Length: 269
Image (cartoon, rainbow, N blue to C red; front, side):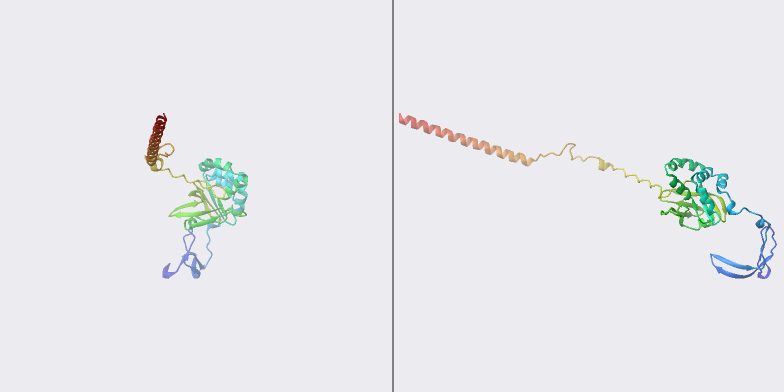
């Protein structure tokens, strides 16, 4: 305003009725507390609103396009735990009907206790606006974490205006905002969050064998290995020659003995 004066007015009135007095506390990029001269009143702000505890979460989800997820809240009994946490602050990540229907075969394979844990895994016991999700990257505990020896947490990731929730099994994208008013925020996901505590990661496919590894070497025969050695043939040939030579020597010796005996027999006559 004129001469550096600062005034405040509700958007529905337009005329400043309260003015800046002094700064009480200033923490840059975090919080500032200002002292103003008068309470700001507004007809819109003063309009009655339902208390957080009176909000029916399952009805809200049903009306906002998460009918199947709302039914799972009721059937597992998890709706009571969600409802109890609204007043102190709650962030809900519901899933669209088509994604829930596609997931139902896996859901039915879980025990009743694990089914409840899976639904509780989609709630965070703290209010997080979309702005808060966009400005934070990190791990979040869930309603399933409370009273459990397992972690049941997931990681929030943001890339510009896009926010994703990542588990060890799957990454789901936030596709819309259904409710975002403290103490309750409800966001819509494109798929069910699958915690590693309940599901196993898909095994990585084995690498395909290379053609070189499968093709047999041209130098290797298809049958059993051969014991053939050319040196064996040479040894066999030399052995045969010695045997033949020995046979000739022995034959000559017998002929000479026979002649000698004939000579003595003729002389005796």
